[in-house]
Image (cartoon, rainbow, N blue to C red; front, top):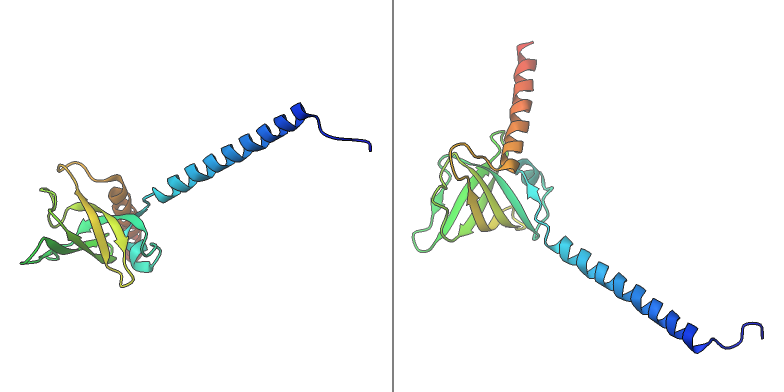
Length: 159
């Protein structure tokens, strides 16, 4: 036999190397899995209405609270309100709890929660803008995109 039996020291080194590779691989897999579960992606109203947002997964959604859309329950802390991107896309959020002091119609809002199969967004947390100059970056991006689109549409209609 050309190779013969493996020496004890070499066999121990091989076992240690295999153990280290498996341990590092397991640790990386667990870390990536934990990071993937904690990602809360932001979805704009048009993405939620079009069905791009995943159903049942924890996400963030936001826009402007539509005027006249806030409905408060008389028996508990449940609140329903509509959020819009000011470009025609509107969806309903249901939240049970105390809303932030600055929450009101016509203001930017971001909600963290899950979208159910009926298209209702069940919020676990609602964040409102904190002063008249601040707008959440995600909501500002959606509104700016829609303003550019609306401006382009107005330019086309004047030609």
